[in-house]
Image 1 (cartoon, helix red, strand yellow):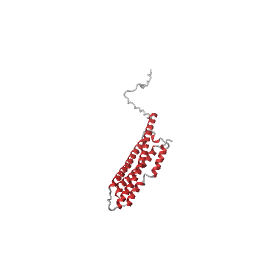
Image 2 (tube, helix red, strand yellow; image 1 turned 90 degrees about the horizontal axis):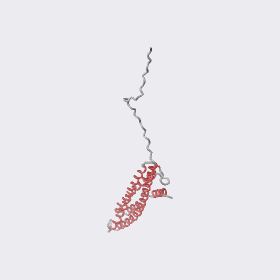
Image 3 (spheres, rainbow, N blue to C red; image 1 turned 60 degrees about the vertical axis):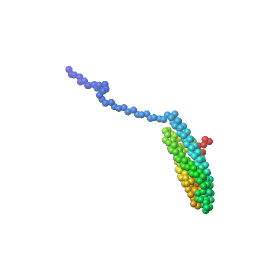
Image 4 (spheres, rainbow, N blue to C red; image 1 turned 60 degrees about the horizontal axis):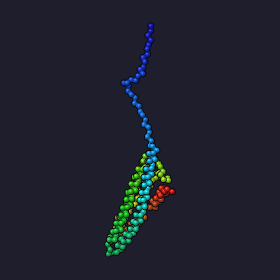
Length: 213
């Protein structure tokens, strides 16, 4: 009698000694919730409105300081001219001290505005880096955040350059040795090279952009 060949059966029980194959779980993408997105845009809008107002207020202060400084320059020019024409008079009469001190204070206002505008520029750049679509959002009529940054960047550079000129005039006008030098200092102050009609036009465009009409 022939014995039937028995094929060994593979055990169905798991081998506890076999290594386990690691299983990778893909992280599900984390999307920003609509509520968080709206909150970021609202925060950005509020902050942008505040910064734009500061920019406009600073320009109003700049123009006022420009006008007052021009008037003081003419006062200094008149007093200094009188002392230069009078051989018996000192080159630095006592009545020159007060207007010179006032002009120095006004020159410092320009420096403060330039520094403040540089800080505003830093904050605008920070807004562009906020989570979400803030940098690509139109908050007013047509400008997006990068356009506000570009405007403020150029304004900051022009303020800084003009502030240097104002400071130089305030420091040197009283030391003028002749009439032509006096006129030169007054002219440098009265007719700005950097904060000029181009900047004024830029602010008119900005005002139109942020107006609610």
